[in-house]
Image 1 (cartoon, rainbow, N blue to C red):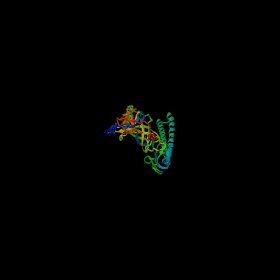
Image 2 (cartoon, helix red, strand yellow):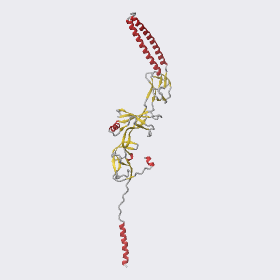
Image 3 (cartoon, helix red, strand yellow):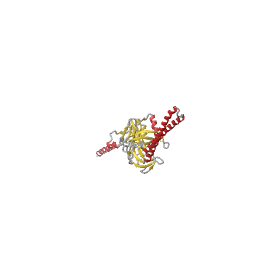
Image 4 (tube, rainbow, N blue to C red):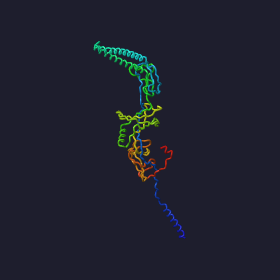
Length: 385
């Protein structure tokens, strides 16, 4: 009876021991590698742009002034309108100048009559002096009188010309074509009495200039890069300029860089750069503060990296995460240049073919392996980037 009871107990005990052995601890599973997106760098031709500030300036400015003294009789132009060179703007009372012209003409006629008389007397004395009918002294006096009368005629002709000019100045015309501002005098005003009186201002507005300022430090850095062969000079009259409007959008009409001034402002240490823009609708007005993106050089082997790929350490040094051939992450310090759209220009630290992490930076760890996601981005996300 004891044997029959002991046999089942042994079997059950052995089963318990075997089941306990099956519950031994298992080895922990390896977590999957984090997924990142990378950008493979390629060299490309890139324009080196500088965003500079400045003010709009009219290419040609003419102050309309009274060149003779008189009373303004009429204002002919409409304020704020476009005028052409030679258009009549004001009329000054011409009566005094007409009288001066008539007097000058009469004086000229008198001088011409006197010149005729002295010239005829000289001719008669020339014939008489050969026959000793008059003395040589009288003949010399006749020659001098003829020459003096000829000089009087020339002086009176100049006086007539001056009087005719003054009469013409009584009609004030536009010296250049452009847009005229408000009138600075009204009818009945006495102008030009002691000095030339300003009457109005004409400015040429299409095309229009944008005078920009750039520090000599930036300009010298650019010149050193050009001399070292790192950059190439933009061709003459080919440097493009883009004007940034108040709302941050680009002015629809492209401009060009005309020249860089040869002198430095001693007070600010800056140089003036002049650009030109079409202005058919007169949206750009003189005196306005603007920002202009100017193309100053070309780098045919430029490397750029997306702004979101840049990290900075506690010292402010720019760095990127690279993925090597073994799919491991490493950190690389870089030296950055200017910003072009949403990319940084990389001056040092990277080379063509480097794979830079642009997404998944928060999951990538230096020295660890990652998995590269090369699937295309969703359309909405790609547009947002």
